[in-house]
Image 1 (cartoon, rainbow, N blue to C red):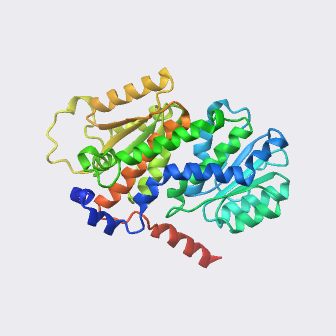
Image 2: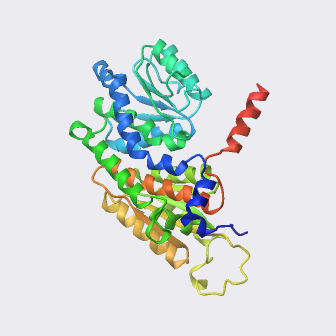
Image 3: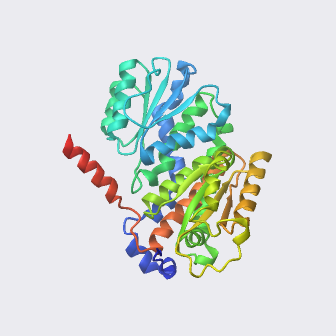
Length: 381
């Protein structure tokens, strides 16, 4: 199997515009503005007032797909230091233990997601504090209003997956007010993350040619491979999950995500399998002209070097992959705080997934298979 990729499309302004008519590239470039707008929306909605109710027993973020990953971003930035459990709930209803002592934040970019509305209804029934993030005037917004819960509206950028920072930022503001995460004085870490997103967008802008554009270069490295994406450190795991989801939705391209050190206990064994360049240490230099498989594994390491163990795990991963002739791409997070480091990884990989779609001649915006699943489920109700 071979993947049809035309590198010339990436440096052709007319081709970029024709293949990306909905402006997914522009949506990714809006990430910094989303952070600032999300911060304002959270403040205007009164998310800070929730702190007056005291620290909850647990905080549940209910959401699906591109909206649900906002909860993963929140949980990863907060990390293990949170004094209360943070649960990202994907599905209808709520966990059996959730109740009046807990805070439930329902996140739905459209405000119409069936499972998320079900979670909001259950929160009201059980007397939990309900907050919402999503489209203004939506069914979710009305539920929050009826429950007298704060609601932060977002401006949708093409779709939920392109609105990540607009959805995640209100959660981070809430977490800071509840004392779950430190965003610095005056939420300065959020502004640093916005500045980082702007810097990455500048280096990945469409008019920068492939050889000086890290987003385009990464897309071309991924083309024709089966990416195995591993994250390290505090925020690497969610960056790997995000990249895998973006490859699926934007580039319609499969990938496998993992997190270290867990991946060293299972996924690493695929380096000795059919999709690896070599099946054992002693045949690295064999002639592979007649090999049957054209698609080969590529290890993608999204490194957050926040502790010595993370650095060691990444180094060993690179060495084991090299011994088996598995190509490796390593991207190291940049920034002082977890949110800034996560922003540096997510923005670059978001651009790369859109560029990979364009290189294949695929419009990154439509999600026809998701739409078909929804229609078929609705027709069976």
